[in-house]
Image (cartoon, rainbow, N blue to C red):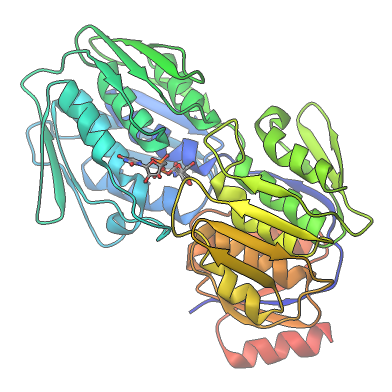
Length: 433
Ligand code: UD1
């Protein structure tokens, strides 16, 4: 099993370029099969989740061809509309976004069957709102043998109120509604940048979606969608992770290929604790040359502070002067990394959905296990900021969402390697001293 071995203590310095947004890519790749024509998608991040979803898309008969590492051509015209087109498999069950094929195939064929979603274990992750939305459009939805099946004689536009702000439900229902008859309104919709990106992509295929990025999305159904070429937005969370890495290691990183507006919640927290954040048109530079100060953070739907940045910022705050409080208001089980940080000297106490963080001067290297994708990235940052050596196990979670993470960190001066055996760990230790 692959692990990262890290020698900490080096400030990360230099430039890094950010990949396409994983969470936008997952919606867009699924939506690409909604036309029989060819779709070319650029800036697709080369991460495990997108590769698994592309395999699933191929598995139901679509043609998928990589033009280069980040550009994919997809043709949904080869899917047999009369076959079962059941989306299942060992890997599909592990990624959450396979459920986007429910909305996409339901919209196109009026029928879809997808394995119940997996994804990171960060608390109960219900899909009741997705189902409520499909039912409101006229679909029958049932779950049996760990499969969700949705079917409709016809899909008819509707007024749907989301009881909770949900990224997944907003995208899924939006996709199905694009090919429903008449008008659909989604109220209390999520406003994340990737919602806008998926909507822009669908509109470039001929859909009629207005209001994405606000909490009311209005969709006028169209008969069919056409081929398009589209480039995915940069990954806000990958960018934020490098921003946190600069702050935690007292580094100086220029993060290129970003949309600074999408990073505002992260930038303003970093400024508040004393880091220097300079915004350019499509880059952001984070400099940290002093001990940073504590603050409080509450995760909220966009434009609030993203829950996907909560563990990485906890690592930054763990090294700040004073006591910080993080309130996690989106997922209930997102503090599992705290036990791992404890092994590295972290002083964090969890009470319900709150983490109380007493700042320490330095982490000390240790052997830790990545509990999920973002927490895994946070542990890597802690390792890079720590005295001594850290081994992070279960990096398969990190590889789900970060492209060439170790490579990018090495280019910034980070001492990190991917290894599989103790012998390789020893070799790394000898090499870096
Ligand atoms: C997406 C992101 C994930 C991010 C999360 C919140 C993808 C592939 N994943 O996950 O990285 O952490 O948004 O920004 O884009 N909920 C319900 N019923 C539902 C659906 C959701 O109650 O049917 C609740 C969830 O339990 C959670 C909240 O809504 O408390 C937000 O979840 P949601 O936005 O749906 O997260 P995901 O789409 O799963």
